[in-house]
Structure formats: structure tokens, C-alpha cells
Image 1 (cartoon, one colour):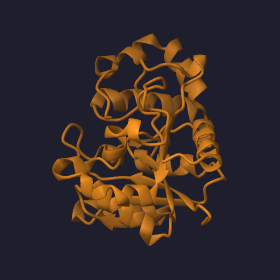
Image 2: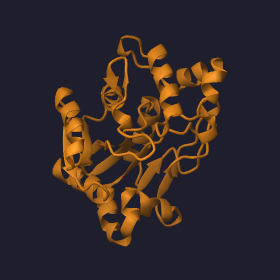
Image 3: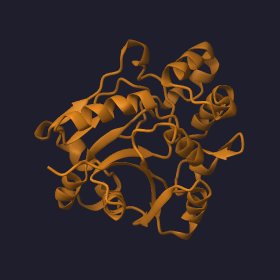
Image 4: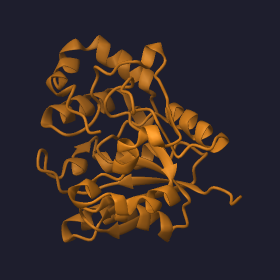
Length: 246
């Protein structure tokens, strides 16, 4: 059996209809994308971190951020994320992918470690904490096999190829899957810590500004505590609480 080489692939583009160039918005002088890169670098169990963006001129700004932070990058199809992500993994000899999206900058590293350990110790096709929503919206992590992604890529056509895990999500009952359920304190599907709307940015900016002193890492528990202590802030984007991407 070949040894797994697991890598984090961050999907990033500046194009966004609801909130243009959202991942280039800055908090404390650092873009949302850059903040996510710095955050995931604080874990030491996955060495490979790759930003997968498009070949469009407008995404040159993403490449500038990658170069500044000395992080690997790959440029591919703007809409065909299945092809872009699988090509990025192939380019850097990744066998198994941790899928993160740049509009979810507050990924919880403890949750990532739990999913990582479950994945490497078992024979799952895909593991996640979002098949059944228990964690806050924006905490999503998926780990899956590149070979399984490529093997089934031809079964996904048209606009559905804009979603890397479309085949997995539509065939969960046919695959070997694991869904991590949030422990009681973290079981807060009512909270939204993703970036799709201007109200989301207001919430994220306040969280990061108040909790990320000197780029110090803060976990999901602290985020939840902070939002619960600030009900007005928590309510800012609550109207979008059910508007999350599958």
C-alpha cells in the first residue's frame, strides 16, 4: 500500500458576485486569505499547503499573497474546481486532499487534527464535519482521496463541476464516509463564521480584531464564547444562517 501524502488545498478566487474580492478584504492590515494561510500554518502535522486559484489576470493578486507568504500555488480552470483541485494535487504529488475554502478563514485546528487522525487510521473515501450540520457555518473541513475524486470526475458535468466534492456529497450512502459531530459546546449550527455577505465581514473582522492579538491562535470554543457575549454582533449575519454552501 502506498503511503499517503496529505496536503491542504485552499480554494481561492477573487471573483464573487455577492461580495466582490471578498478574500482580499483586510483585518489589521492582513487579507482574509493571508489570515487563513497564517492560521493553518500553526499546525505541524500537515506540511503541504497549496493555494489553488485561477489563471485569470484578476487572480494575480492571490499569487502575490502566496509569494509574499512563501506558500505554494497552482493556477487552473476558473470554474472547473474538480479539475483545478485534482490538477493541483497531482502537480505537488498529493495523494489525499484536505479541502479548505478561502472564505472560511477561522478553520479550527483541533477539529482538523481529529478529522486527519480519523482519515489516516481508517479506510474512508471522505471524512468531514459538515455532512450533517453541527459545527458553525464556516467551520467546514473535508478530507478525501485524490484517486477517488479523479475516478468519479467524469460523472459530474456542467456547472456541478464548480463544486469539488459534488460527487461525494451526492453519493454519501454509496461511499465509505465519516461525519464528525460537534461536541456539545461546539454544536452551534446557528452561528455563521463564513464570508459571503458584507454582514459576514463585519462579524469576522470583529472576531479577528478582538481575539487575534499578535497573531495568536484562538480556537472555535473562544469564537463561540465571544459571539455569545456579543449578541448584537452575533445577530448581524443571523439572517443568512441557513444560507450555507453544501
